[in-house]
Image (cartoon, rainbow, N blue to C red; front, side, top):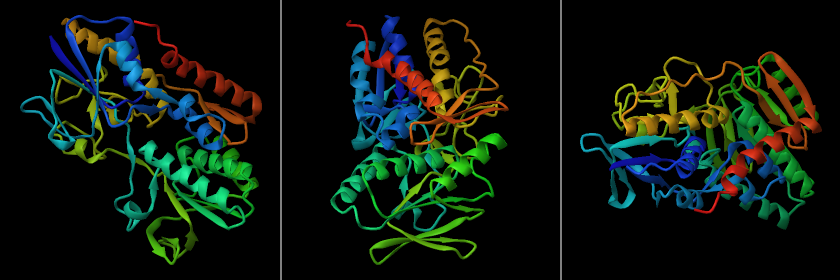
Length: 380
């Protein structure tokens, strides 16, 4: 019997568990370690914040999924690895032995270098924490809809743009009369990893919706002032607001950086084409936490989804003593970006379609189909 331990309930691991449930292996003890029973599907998260989806529609129930996969679910926080003894170290002194290990815990926004950000800004990840703050904010504004509400979002990538538009759409539905939304971006353009046409269209959408853009502004401090927060930029710009949401570049959590596995400069686990650690052959990584050494991939949920089946195949093969199969990511991929108002923009390579209701319906169908595979599990 081999102990196969999965750390994290990300998209890749959700697919791995479903496939092990459909095609069980008799020779493994399967364990999932994750802090929460419900894991969010990133594709539907902006829609949930905008008010289009209920919580349960965009979260996978890992307890049900583990029952289907005949896996043990351990709700705990991983704090480190003991690679000498092949053990996962969890909070409260709990230790889990492994023969094979797979890690799919996503990423966290980089903010520790900015004074006050860790204490006063709300990170986009972990998602559970983000949603707790968002629900509380909604409760407050419902009680006092006339009060001026100012929200700042630091980070003008796709995540920051979608978050700004989704929050604005929800708050407008709640009839908030005085709303200010600020979006800070260090470079001179939004969404620098996307095609020029996407950047131009989304900037127009934001400006037309009244979002205040602060481009070429590097936030250097977040500090409390009376009942508000103050954002200071290197240029001297100062903005006061009620909440600061942090959606900057992704980085790895500290325990991964310190585990002794080979990582890149941001702490992400370096993996080969088999999604196998380049330094430890019995450890695999997928989704945002992994960096493929032979491909330059953005940290996007589409790759975590696509890596699920290849990861499952190679975990299965290594248990059975078979040779592993390479995963080759697609060069161009479809990206559907919601605008918070029941429309979405579509882009693939150099092709961009401007926001439209039909594109939102297309995105909605794709996302609901993905979630259905976890919500309609066959009875075992």
